[in-house]
Every structure is written in C-alpha cells, then in structure tokens.
Length: 79
Image (cartoon, rainbow, N blue to C red):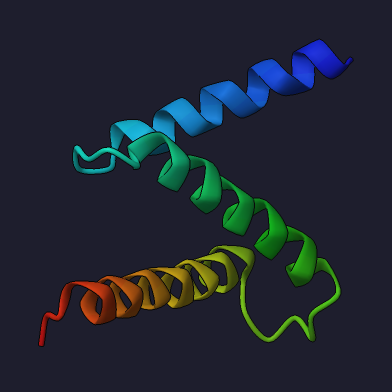
C-alpha cells in the first residue's frame, strides 16, 4: 500500500512540477504545493462548508503563493 501511495504522490507532484516555471527549487516547490493542496482538503472537511472544495483549496494556494512572493520580494530587495 505504501508503494502505491508513493507512486500516486509522485504522479501528482510531477504534474504540479510540469506546470511551474523552471528554477532550481522547482521540485521542492511542487512538493510543497502538493502538501498545501493535501492539507487544504483535510481542512475543508472540518470547515463550515461555506466554500466549495475547489474554492477552499484555491484560497489556500493563493495564500501560499502570496507568502512565497513576499518572501522572494524581501530577500531579493524587489519592490
């Protein structure tokens, strides 16, 4: 069962990675975003249900992207 779970995770992370722009941390970013997506689905289960699952996950992803943008902006002196 563990092998099948690892294979499924690899397939999902490969799909996420394929949609990201090239960069040295591309795989790590894909793994992180997969974690955000998986975590968001678990959080949605216990949420108040005011958002559909896809909207809930997208909101969590937007928050993660905004944090990444902010971190890059601060560390690279952009803005």
